[in-house]
Length: 284
Image (cartoon, rainbow, N blue to C red; front, side, top):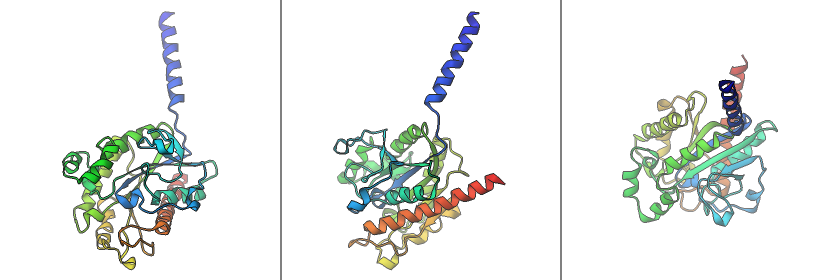
């Protein structure tokens, strides 16, 4: 009788645990990482602050000025990255995703980016050496992520997995690695680590990489786009998002607000297409 009661108690605890950690299959979660153009360098405007509550951000740092606490979900009003950043591609990625998904779907983003950083900062085996040589202005941003942006991204992603399903990874990085032909392999290292650490299926979780400011806008790092274009040769389930025609700011390095809106929507167009294809294959 005692053993039977113990079994019943154990079964009950499992049910409670399962209920507490139940994933909502209609909550689509995306990881966003990179440097300043993912961080968001443009000031957001009044039109950017009206956001559907189904688009949410899991705050990756404590932001008292925004009344946000790390590890909790909030309506995805900019800034999405840290407490005082600007408009980013993720803002209009989320909006366009909602427009293309069923009415019962939600979209969540986890946003970790550090302006000026090389891709090495997101390599969990190399970030400490890189951070140690970073300029002081960058060290402050790294410190906001507990000194380990990759680790914070994974930490927040694991929290998010209790609520929804990770459907894709967005990266915008490369300006600080311009003309570095090892960049695709380094991105693959980060991607592979995310897949392993979060127990994801690489066939079901694509990586979308955005081009830097295009040559048609006078982009000072536009030569990097030739290297970014080779990423699918290294990561089979990866796709390059064109920045052609996406307007930029006076420095020809960062997009302006309209450029971020355009680029974000292009990320979403590709992601929606991939989701549609996956659904069609599953239905066969």
